[in-house]
Image 1 (cartoon, helix red, strand yellow):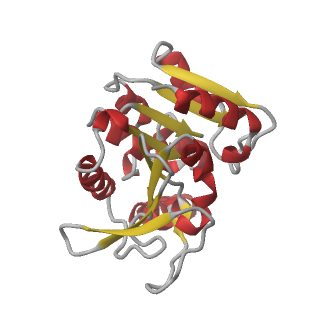
Image 2 (image 1 turned 180 degrees about the vertical axis):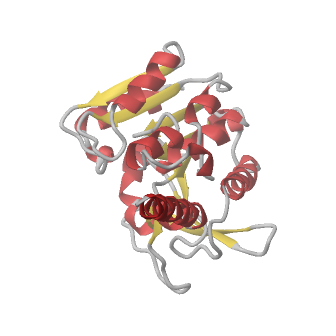
Length: 267
């Protein structure tokens, strides 16, 4: 009987170790869900835009779209969510263009027409910084807004913490991915997480306005994640609560558009 119990427990431990090992080795496929586009794919949007490519130090290409306003007073550098491609995000630019901001949005490695694969948090951070540095050659940093949505909020917060943009705008952010992992995988040790995106740590180093928009009905990244950030940085963060709003479609919410117009109208 003891042998049976010991064998059973050993099997449970073995399965758990295999599960944790698989989770560690395949984190990218559990976090990122890219839509890939052919190299000759032609984007179609009603607004004026230019396709851009940024070469990485290891020989890959990050594809981006620069949406152009009629009279430019600055740039919004937008980091999107964990799925889809630029094809899904062009519609979000209208409010910025109407307020005379150009918008640059990029596809991460393996998304859209960008080549390569995501392999580490540092790689993502380095790619974003490289592109930000390129854009600083064309825009005064005091006129650059960094913006992130969903998974992109952690990356946007890190990028902002290492630079000095005009402001930081976050749509549906999380306190940190470790907290989200505990929610979705409560039995997995947090140290296995390669992508931590500790938003709260990055915001400590940000000394400029931070605007957060979060849907009260978000069942992907709960609204309380933004409340927690607001409570930790009450003087830094302006939190706009979007009623009857889920995780997707924030950019269409009337209250979001109203507040965003006020933010962007400031000199």
